[in-house]
Image (cartoon, rainbow over the protein chains, first blue to last red):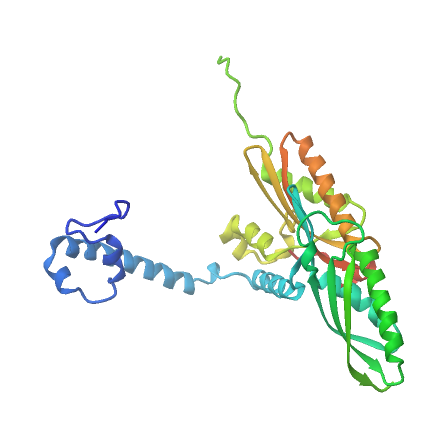
Length: 194
Length: 137
């Protein structure tokens, strides 16, 4: 059996890690009969007690608890990062990459959709076009695809409004994001009374 | 006195981060740097106990929010997160930021390495001011 020379071993051949792993258990028959193991367990027991005390003190010491402002800052950022969604690749080169968050693009689409009379934007998902994830972007390349769900006023001409919305989304993504929208799929999932 | 020149490290990653942040904010179309968990935790990691006890995080210097810099072998890598003005094409703004930061790093004597830019928000400037007061970080 190959022995890893980098792991500290007791005179009996056991690793110090094995002794540490069983420190919370009663000593085994081998440990009861082995001088090296008994000595190691005695030393490790002091270490275990010291770490337990430190852990307890840290939990009890109010001065070591983060201030609520710090906790709030961390939680606010954690929530913001979840809201941002995926980072979509927009440009890739040896010198670095540019990514744009799904939320950033969605906010542009929502602002365009909600400005159309009789349209309320709902869930929006953005996907990178499969053939444009690598390499510098070139003009005219389809970069992303958009799947947008909307609710429309009951009196709305749905085909006409959907086409108007599609053109609006394509032009807004070009103007405000700098990418090109290849496919813009619009699903009318609800009607609402005006 | 020795004839050998003294070796000294004059440009730290903190300075590069400052320069990158300033360069980004000076680029037309950039509204602000966007803090991330990574940048916050990196900053908290410096003087952790002091940061945990701090009563008001708004007094914490936020100069490195949204910027992460590593300097190795004279090469500076930068990761930067920004919010852009909806009046500009975000991709073009990010390209301009990348190019300007590369120039700025060159002026320090370091070699620009990878400069990764993430656009995390695209907003109207007025909305940005109202919805996002100066970062408390």
